[in-house]
Image (cartoon, rainbow, N blue to C red; front, side):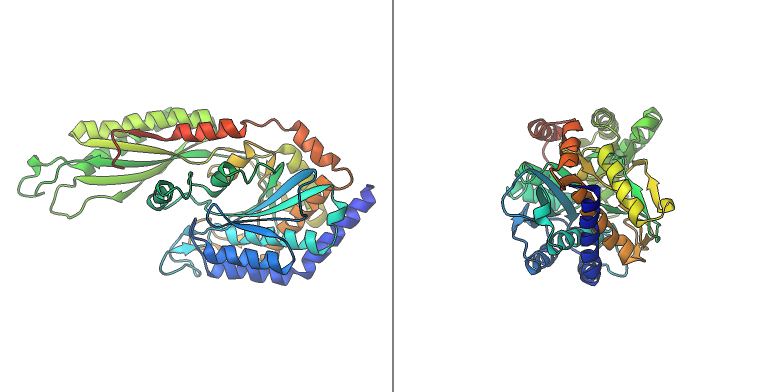
Length: 445
């Protein structure tokens, strides 16, 4: 297929997306107004299904509880490129669209990801170019990217409903990525209300942790000497981790950010049950593992210092993100057709984490950051300033990239796959994740 023919396909897809921009924006706004937390996204999942039904895309649902998966064509012939969007919100009280009961709010922009997802589906389906693409396109609405509500998710694991904390991890486990060769997903860019694209490169991975200090209750005024203060144990443990920070290498981008979820029961009793949740984040899997070992030593020392029992549970979080440079280069060339050069930026390392990292360890992936919003991620001041920039533009860019990958004999897509060296096989990936599960000191946590 000639360059001119490919450009005409892109123009047709973009024209179709523009013609349906109102529908795309209304969808994103609807999702924003009814935020739901991970593995509970029933309303959001239905909204995605309704869009797929309206444009004639067959789909499967109930994947990892709430996930939805549709394909542009029946069957699977050739390369399969997946566009992803996340269904869940985060807990952020005080935002104008926060759910007053659950505290859920779309202050991470997942409603905009879903807009880009359904927008690209609309463009590729309604433009009628599917038969011009040598391969298939999968549209996946995935649950539970925000790694929160540990207790609820542990219950789901115990019930056998899920096996991992993250939606993409669970979908990998269930085999829903077995037929996917290339994956793409966008994310909102903080404090950037203008039409802007930042090319993502990498991000931290993390291990999740719950820590319980078990002491002995006593009257805090009458007989504190008869108690064992679990809160003091927790404070010493956390100070121990803080004392380790000078040993963290700059190039490993290590982060440890705990919260105390239970500090005691009543003020006039020595606390005998104190609980902490935290992540250990780092740039590489090796740094995650080694730092986690240091953190465990420090946390256990807090309990040992006061004679409390320490129970530490480590849970597999997400693996580091590694974006395909080849995909980034192709994506950037499409950006230059829709944005001024000043609106396309090269990104560096992202210190937070995403389960898109897990996907990127297995198949070539891209994770650009998109402007159109003001405020910070996960904060109450997060606000969409320009819906076109935030969800319509990325829909066009994904559709254009898919045309590049699959047009003609899909040579560009084949080259991306050929040049990609997976860090892990699926079997190795699942073995590593399961190996992260560890309990020190007992089973109470």
